[in-house]
Length: 384
Image (cartoon, rainbow, N blue to C red):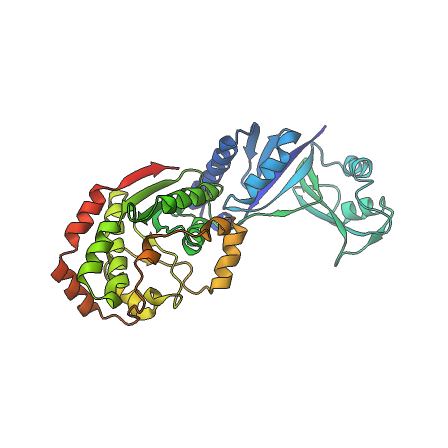
């Protein structure tokens, strides 16, 4: 008897201690189930310590492939033929009967065999036997076609393709973080990279409605719907920021406004993070990309936070960020023209080397904390 199924491999979590492995492994399995359930795919899931297996109907194969490609913690997977035997003759007969058209006479090929358990033959014995049944030239270094055979005790798995996964850690394994998301190119990519390290992202978006339209919120929702392929459950806070920006604009000289906006956002983010029992913030900043992201200004902005601020893009250039944005399908939405919280209130000549004492003195003078409390009272929360 044989049937087709997906064989799923994971890497980094296998290196953890037994208690940590068990926890991460269970999170990964739950994430796979949740993504398949979200797409209404009928399936059966089984697992061993080394592999996860999914059975589903042929009509679901392509959709299941696309889902598995984006689940963090999966290093690779294959659609395999499963045989309930490790008998060398039966495996060879199956390959000869079912893979006769896979390798053409003019193509080079290789047979890749791995084994686990006790058998009367070696991996080389099985590879040689099957290779002798194929009318083509062997090339172990750079073959045009490959057949993989994974024999595990009294079972065999045969396949021709290893599909690369996203790797990393399962989402949720590293706890929760609060991501400041703008609707631009950078912050969705930062979010993606934190998902890869096992973080569950909760989002915070500052908007300037009614000075601007609702488009920045709509863009953000569209981006988050794309990011759901990495994290199926998404919570976002929308905080109105126009009153704070107008107040700073009318009371502070232009060159310091961006720094004051950023520090105000960070203080508000800290309040939300504390209510969610979150221990870190995340931004899409890259060192030197704009005036607020100079080393001096990052230092001043950091001092407004009680929590660590993680910046996964800190060493990336713009081309690298754009490449990742295209890879995760957020780029086209991110580049849509839209008046947002940052661009609308940006002065022509912002300070690039702000001093902490100067900024703190301004904040004490204008008593900005009262405006921040009002913004928090008007905050809205959504589940995407």
